[in-house]
Length: 437
Image: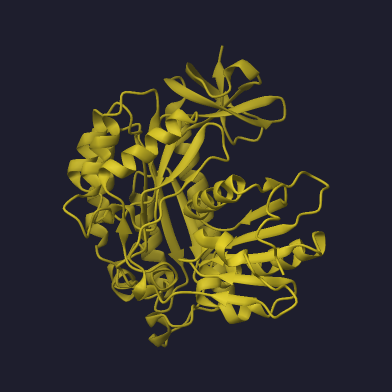
């Protein structure tokens, strides 16, 4: 039995899987526990509590979650094991049966972790606390403070789209967000804590304000009016919600970076219809063309899923041709994984797992080509770089405003500062550009 008064100086370790939103939420949980007296475990120490924030976007993600739970149980055999996140929401009974698990919390319960830990009897089977997604309406803000230079600010949660391959609406509920004023206040708190760059994260951030009288464009403009030394990046936004108004605003923005991450998922209208996406490839091509016409230097990352049911060899080849025609900078390739309860399982035509991997490999090669072409176009240009504390050997890392990875010899005085530099040649691994002194 956990005593209410023994949280002080108890050691806790966190393990987060999945998206940037999960990392932001783990940070918020960590702050709540720190305020109650918990301290993060140091290397070599035994934890009193392990918190695992899980992902469930694919079968692989589920497997990684199970592996992480087992590994932490071996490393900290006497710790209280708390599992939360999307996997915990979707399959709580399955998780409760994993050796070492004491407490399973759904997506709505994760922020009340201390309340559920009080009175927990670890001698009994694992407790499960979840809420049905259609009963969740409250938005719970969070911001990741684990990196000194880049913060991840949760501006939205949940999704009202029900794409046939996706379980996210079942794991996170309906779309919801705070107000523009409340979100700006959270951004200011991050800036006051030292943030030089803030990434706007969520499940479907373009849906911000969908149940109020505000919208994502209102939020972008309000954040841009903040009179502080900070950069904002827009994370993944649906192409049908990335309005021309937003694109045109970013062109002359003070703080919003020329960096876009847009999910395409497939380059054929036939597969997009099977997925129940809310756009066609012509709209997607228009958005890319609009961005590159107004901001030729903009970085555009694109999500693609390969091997979904109904994606024939011919449709995949057509998708590849379309993607190759786009002036984009990088692909984030996901291999389709069957998810229980999704409508895509109703489609009979299935793609063998080996073929899915083959298609993934093809698109990864295309992504490498696109990224190298974009980096080559940036050589010789002068750009502001925000330097991070991360190392690559003797070099420090940073990113330009348009998301080019840059290296220079390490100098601790440059950490968390913005420096105007001239971009030079590739580093040895061809993973970044060096600066020209």
